[in-house]
Amino acid sequence: MPTVSVKRDLLYQALGRTYTDEEFDELCFEFGLELDEITSEKEIISKEKGDGKADGASDIVLFKIDVPANRYDLLCLEGLVRGLQVFKERIDAPRYKRVTPSDKQLQRLFITEETAAVRPYAVAAVLRNITFTQERYDSFIDLQEKLHQNICRRRALVAIGTHDLDTISGPFIYTAKPPAEIRFKPLNQTKEYTAPELMELYRTDSHLKHFLHIIEDKPVYPVIYDSNGVVLSMPPIINGNHSKISLNTRNVFIECTATDLTKAKITLDILVTMFSEYCAEPFTVEEAEVIYPDGRSTFYPELAYWKETVQSEKINSKVGICETPANLAKLLTRMCLKSEVLEDGKQIEVEIPPTRADIIHACDIVEDAAVAYGFNNIEMVIPKTYTIANQLPLNKLTELLRQDLAAAGFTEALTFALCSVDDIADKLGVPVSSTNAVHIANPKTAEFQVARTTLLPGLLKTIAANRKMPLPLKLFEMSDIVVKDSSRDVGARNHRHLCAVYYNKNPGFEVIHGLLDRIMQLVSMNPGEKGYQIKAAQDSAFFPGRCAEILVEGRSIGKLGVLHPDVITKFDLTLPCSALEITVEPFL
Image 1 (cartoon, one colour):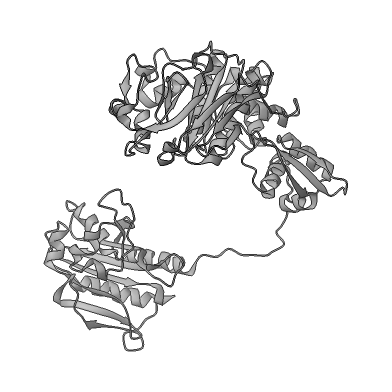
Image 2 (image 1 turned 60 degrees about the vertical axis):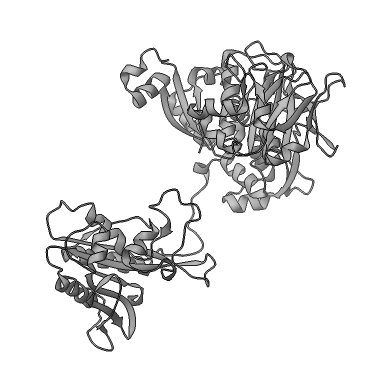
């Protein structure tokens, strides 16, 4: 969940009243949020870097509020206050309006066909006659960053650019050029750079280096120019310094370039609806025209309102309450979803504003009704379906065996489910093709390339990391291994295995054999053809003549024996070792 930091005093001022910490915590819970932490800038720095680094930091109290990931309208102080005020019925939800300027003032953004290779979409809008204070400006910048991290997926899907419209002149051109042909002065820099020089400059920047990979391998980089050839931005990396906004900015041109048009439209709608309240005519946004390479044009922002009809009976049954349609409509209106009961007296017509991109289905409306009603106010009832929870039989067997293996003097280990190809193939002397292993498509390290097909490598690596411990080392693990299975919808199957290893100055085959006998005793398997038996076998991981196959009712469930010296050496061990590995599923 995203966390929004707001100054307490600024929040209370916007809400028009003060709360105790407990009261505000309760208000957040009622609204479906969580007050995560009450802190200050000084306290944060002190925790992260030590008291010495916190000198001079602000003592202003900050509220850190956890917000649902799909509630983009609550990612800033403005949206948070607006939502709480409507929820407490102190104000009505505002009506957002798109206005059309005169043809001379209409801003146009032309998209060229070259952008198709990198970021083919763009949307734009204008906030006209806006008034910034330091707090509003900081919130404006912070919301852009929150959106970049959230719906914009770290600028991979959408990149936002905001510009002082009075410093540039339209129409604007969104195109893509070879990096060497792009040259401009980036934000907060004193000289011009070419695009390749900028990429090198920001490679060490703690903030911008995370976005370079989005376009650095592309043959062309996206760039936006005004009619005079001034660079507005090179999305998704950096804006130009020429058009940067300040506290004195009165008209803001907003452009969003994207690989996902739907996300771009949502991002633009959220940004303009949150800050249009500071315009001379509150909650109005000036439209801009975007002309595509094929000649078609679209006006943004959309600021679309749409309606959904839900049955009041459905809301009551899903939430578990019994409210009249009129009361339900009132509850939804408190959540910024203007609602009214239709003539039949049973259906509710709900109007979804452009700020609520999270509403995509009637179930989302039901959820908001539950939030407004109050989860604590829903009466608890005994479910009509009588069910008893029970432990999965395989897990129950695993837990019982663990206890007795520990009682037998073995220590349990828990190793990684992923390992390298060498661990399950080369080090055990078997070809990769015969392992039937599930491979990771894009492994980040050589240590995690495949899902393990045996537990033995993990235990041997554990012993190698604990060679200084007193001998003997007796370890066991009971976990899942994964193998390919084309009959499963996911293409793989899990098997629960038990693996035990004895490491000492002598092989200790009799110790492992004794452990096997104890396991069979616990699962009520007697020696013999109708119970269990061991039969000489060959396996590349075991010493020739010191390996046996374990059969239960004539079916092979695993092997035990003394490990081959080559295997021991490949796992950086120097002493003999005996091992046992079986599947426990046949004992269910």
